[in-house]
Image (cartoon, rainbow, N blue to C red; front, side, top):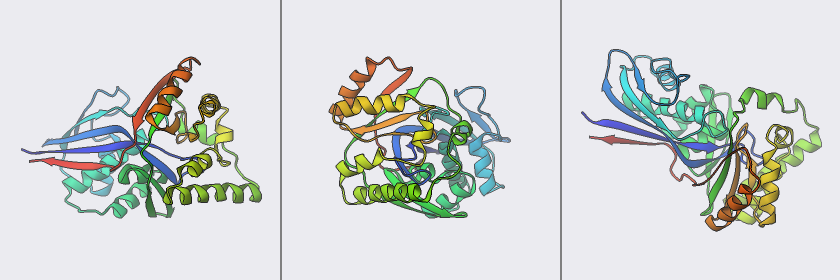
Length: 293
């Protein structure tokens, strides 16, 4: 019997000023193998006791919301996406669930249809769009009707600082201001607009500057993630721009070449930050499905 392998990338969301709309896909993955039919759903994993191993697993719940009559299967799950660190671990499970429903239910859904389902089921656009499409995306939604455009990224890598402590999205959301003055909102939107235009025209020097000029959320959340300003300052000493807070935090992401990020990693190692530092590639393709006949 053939097996189906689903692979969903991690995401670095809220790319600069693109809160809840712009994100990038990273070369860290949730991998799901759909195996034989079973009487009840079985989800095999070594991801901890907090993650269900039955029909209550988020992937299975997602799949069944889309197609309730799916036959139960055994799933084997592996992931190198850290949980509750602002790298889209929940999003990857939602996207995997959509792919499971699409495959087992023979639904033949398009990417726009899958995107609409992801939004309907509670995924945030800056996570679900890059997870589905790869590279970077800018997206919007009117209710459950979502639209996304893929944004090209240069041949760069990212340095990610992943703090040892989790930061719950709820706590991070509570830190945000409830209102913004109109003048601030207009200027913040203009920065995001220029970021998108710079990426579409291949002007990375300008794009990397705009990434660091968010006025929507980073100032409020930087109190929860003090490493953001430390890493940005260290990067500037090496003439590297393009550092931002991923998602609701606490992961901090910096774009750069391999040579630049190697120097930055060495510099940050001297600061003895409480967390791990990794240099990883960007994902180009988004979620993939491979059937092994």
